[in-house]
Amino acid sequence: MSTSLNPEMILQVGLGFWASKSLLSAIEMEVFTELSKHPEDLETLRGRMGLHPRSARDFFDTLVALGFLTRTNGIYANTPETDLFLDKRKPSYIGGVLEMANHRLYPFWGSLTEALRTGKPQNEAKDGGAPLFEALYADPARLKEFLKAMTGISHGANQAIARQVSWSRYQTFVDVGTAQGDLAVQIALANPHLTGLGYDLAEVGPIFEDYAEANSVQDRLRFQGGNFFDEPLPQADVITMGHILHDWDLDIKRMLIAKAYQALPEGGAFVVYETLIDNDRSQNAFGLLMSLNMLIETPGGFDYTAADCEQWMREAGFRECSHQHLVGPDSMVIGIK
Image (cartoon, rainbow, N blue to C red; front, side):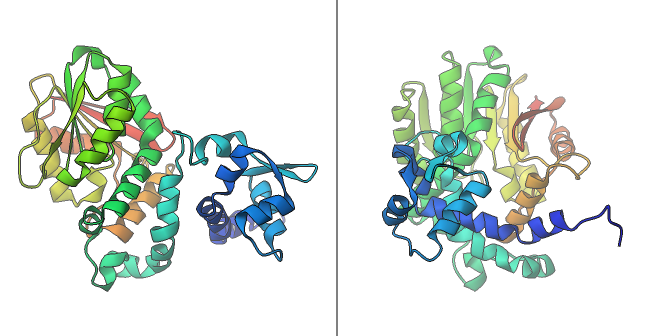
């Protein structure tokens, strides 16, 4: 065997669930929220978390070795990143999507091989439960958790969209599938001349309105309940869709793009953003893994490249199409009517 080759990367990825579950359990037990109050020694932290003495030290030191905690003279503390992003009391908290991963996705991904062989979802629907979105929207507590999770995973991209789109040429926008409303809120905060509409199923309305009010933009944002399968999209100068198209099969993707085209004026813009797969399909592993997650979660959803999206937009009639990177694995495609 060549001495220049080693199996480290194979082992790290193959056993990556060890590290993943360690982080998810720490979030579940609110380790980072606890340490955001003040650093603590082993025994204090163990007691506060209610852990058995057998492996508490190994657990916290694992978080140190993985880069999620620091330890100085036996005192554990958050890193700057975990203090900012994993303290539940901060608005920058992104742990909602990781809480959902821990509660739902972690066990479902154990059936990935079956999903690859059958092409069928491996979530609650596998055992006769309601489809993902139907189940979520029927349970107010789960819906709120899900919408907060979507804000957490999308917040950085939403802020980038609020800055990078040429909003000065427009007056109104509609965010389709708005969820908690973070994209609409960030656009409104960064562009005081705009008024916007959050569009989603009616159950989302109170959550959207509370979020807009909490960010003091309720005077320029309103909510409209509706179902984009059954009715035209609301009209505006700009229509946005974030992490929406990847939920659906190709026919529905094309239908939604066509509805956006019909709802826009000449010169209006359609902004789509996702964890877009790179056009070579070899670099953005997160985007490709997200597409596998759509296999686990939906009957027909899949992620796609910017080139794919631009082609679908042109087929719908958009005359100009371009794409831009946002932040992390997220990018946006803009089509001009």
